[in-house]
Length: 131
Image 1 (cartoon, rainbow, N blue to C red):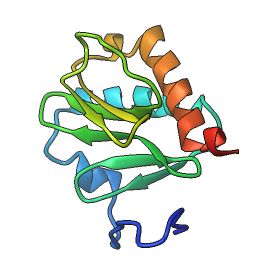
Image 2 (cartoon, rainbow, N blue to C red; image 1 turned 180 degrees about the vertical axis):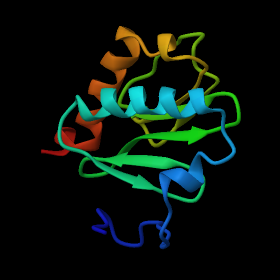
Image 3 (cartoon, one colour; image 1 turned 180 degrees about the horizontal axis):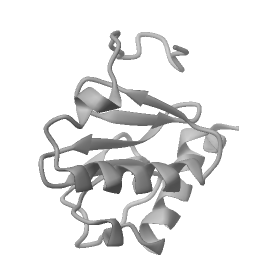
């Protein structure tokens, strides 16, 4: 694993998608596959299953998905503030980074707006704003 900054938090372990989705309804895994396809459509990414979530990395982590029994909890990072009722939670990371959390309950929820946000998050993940 490549760490972008010194002293960056990380965890070690071998985790699988099968284990991660073992307590979820089958449709949650289908929702995840559509989310994964949307993220991979943004460009070259690395998918890393962890104990409780799957993260997607370009140069840094920019999106993640956490399976629940009946839905998929997704999150991504943008460089701007958005007010939208879709978001369950918005976190602020420094002066210009925001983490957006939402619950996806069906494949139909993964529409064009989320695809645009993921493309924007991918740019953040590539850290193009630093060059």
